[in-house]
Length: 103
Image (tube, rainbow, N blue to C red):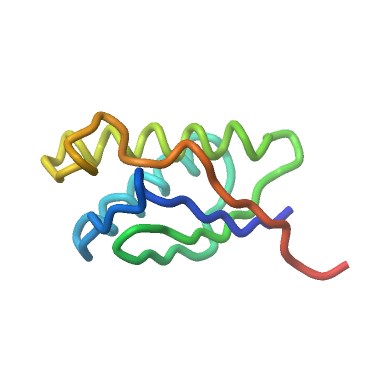
C-alpha cells in the first residue's frame, strides 16, 4: 500500500533548512527500517514535508505517523535546531495522508 503523507510544523513556522531536512529524512529512514516499511520519496520545504511511503497492511497510518513525528522531533531537538516559538513540539498534531497508486 502507498500513501502520500504531508506533515507541517507547529503554527506553520518556516524552521527547516537543507541540513535539518536531511536530519529529518535520516530519522524517518531509521523509523521505517525498524517498523518494516519503506520511504519511496522524501521532500520538504521550510514549513512542511512530503513523504511517499510504502507499507504493509498490518501497520496503521496512525502508528506510522506517530512514530515518524515523535522520533524526528526528538532528534531535531537533540541536534540543537530551533523549534517553533521555542515550544516543545516541532510538528502540528494534524497530518494529511492520501492513498496513491493504480488498481
